[in-house]
Image (cartoon, rainbow, N blue to C red; front, top):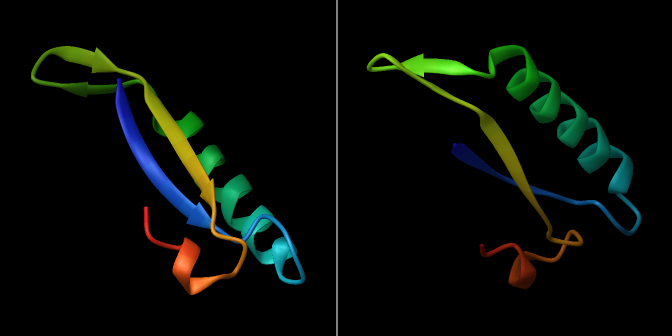
Length: 60
C-alpha cells in the first residue's frame, strides 16, 4: 500500500476548491492503482486532511 497525503479545504467558505482537488487526486489514484514497483503491485490510498482554510491547522 502506498499512501499519498492530501491537504485541502473541505469545510468553510472555500470548500468547493478543496472538493475539486480531492476528486482530482482520488481519480488519479484510482487510474494509477495498482502500480508495479520492483515486481510487486501496490494499491494507492489517498489520505485527506481538512485544514479548514486555516494555516495553523494546515500542518500535517
